[in-house]
Length: 115
Length: 113
Image 1 (cartoon, rainbow over the protein chains, first blue to last red):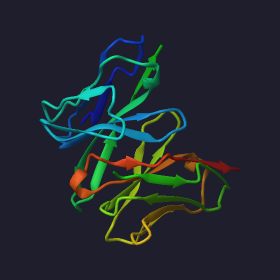
Image 2: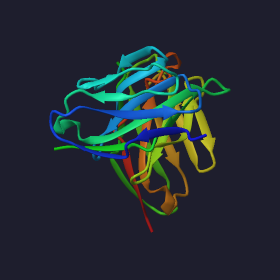
Image 3: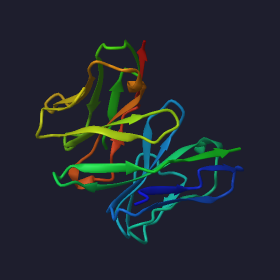
Image 4: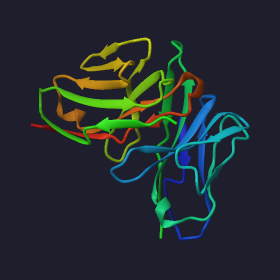
């Protein structure tokens, strides 16, 4: 299993450009999430999904769109990049373990710089 | 919605001493509390977690305690070692929202030789 994969690893955008951060998991997990991590700060939830076709907003959804057409993929779209979106973006997938406890696994992250 | 506060933001302890990190949460429906460790430039990794029907859980040198009445939970690391240096995050979630896990702001733990 590759686990949770993210592409690209690094990206530089100009203000106003749009792009899609890719996230895929091969563990057949129902649940997936996107977080952003700013320097010296915690992880803030952008959007999350409880299954294919179902998404919802997290703590900081403005400026981002998501879709979940398959269990495996959960892309994050930046509509019109702004310098405030410079951050490291982590995708995560999770499932209920045998003891009904949530187990969450993170991807390696995408470092995005908006100039 | 859920809000998780974490203290302290930085913590420096002598190697071999204990470290304690504390978190509070706001949503009384939260019933799952994981802790993550993040080394520099790496992804967060789950190190231990606790459910709301359990007051304490231990895994070797790491333990977590939960006080549901007061809505706070803590991470205890005993006999600290240099490899414990990292940023630690607490988080909270409900079973009905397995992908909506809200994180605290993190604690940077440094172990002094």
